[in-house]
Image 1 (cartoon, rainbow, N blue to C red):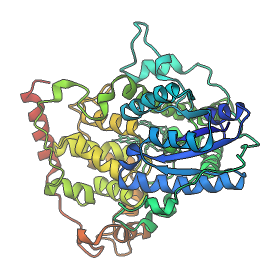
Image 2 (cartoon, rainbow, N blue to C red):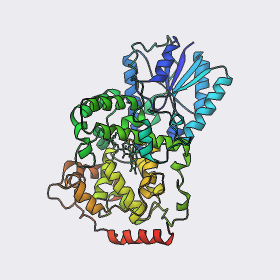
Image 3 (spheres, rainbow, N blue to C red):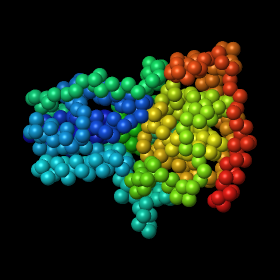
Length: 469
Ligand code: FAD
């Protein structure tokens, strides 16, 4: 009886506990990806990037004598169909921790068990399962630093090697054709402009990790905040899709630490921010949809994502160079530097007093490293409505931030074309990426700020004061 391996955000062969457990059953393994409602609901860029990941992983499996079976529909219905068609006796998968995935997976597990199928979920997407990290009082951590102290000396199991034999079955069930799924259909931008920025697949991720821990991690602490240089790992898209495991990153970071690399601990701490985000969404699933601190519920946010100010924010033409450069970077590359994410999120939620959900939704649509937990936490952190948030009264000044973190103007020059005699290729590529309907051109003059920074800041501070936060 074959075993089904239900793949979701674990598109790799190494350090894959669910794959190893499936193989341990001694029977042939059938890898399956299901385009269900959760996957259908992805925003334009993450869905397109998932399509690239699936295409690549299918090739990897084929080169190893296996296959990726693609099916569309309700996950339980599809798995039941496959059990019937193949006679499979077991289904294995790697756990996810957001509310929609948990609800789906619980229902699938109990229904399959009732059918007499051995349904098993496994760790792999996180370093520490959320229920294994508790405060002394027995709750979950609402503040990052004590969580870091609680986990930093824990043993993380050494990564599992990629299995040698993927045990293909003699006959394969039918598969959809990935092209028919049109995963890039909602990318109403020049996807070919974004393509070169994608680091697709396990091999590329491993190479990047090796390069980063060899060449760059040593200076991570001093360079991680500079958006104009390649000073971070760029592994978030791979971690988001499971093309690399957090344990592989953790162990590579530890090795660098033991070899004396200065920035290694700071980098490992970032991996724990990702854990923190997941533990929060597991314990407080509402973090993805509602103010984590309810006192923000009656704050007079603008909730309209189509006002002129918000549209200018999305299109990178607020007239505030740090904000605009960052928004354009995201539109072209699918990613945005962490410092820049904090700046644009602060500008939207504070200067423009716009609900963080409006920004979250735009990021949901544009980020190829989109991650439900980190995105929700990042937005609530920036808005001040989340756990361990940036103090609500701290309003980043994008001008002084730019002086501090882009002193040579590299970041702005990389992404803003207007006003330069010889704009950079990347800045020009933004105009190839955007839809024509935006009506923008590189020869336009750079927009004057619609809102003075001091005015936006005053307005937000007054609103906070009125509510006596
Ligand atoms: P590195 O600096 O090399 O860090 C290594 C890894 O640690 C990252 O790949 C990531 O997995 C994790 N990490 C780093 N910083 C954070 C953080 N602040 N929170 C959680 N995990 C972190 N990250 C996403 O992966 N997906 C998102 O959708 C996302 N949305 C965000 C939205 C906002 C408003 C903010 C402020 C942050 C968001 N982040 C998100 C977190 C962070 O910006 C990115 O993880 C980081 O920029 C990725 O770059 P890197 O891989 O080079 O990170």
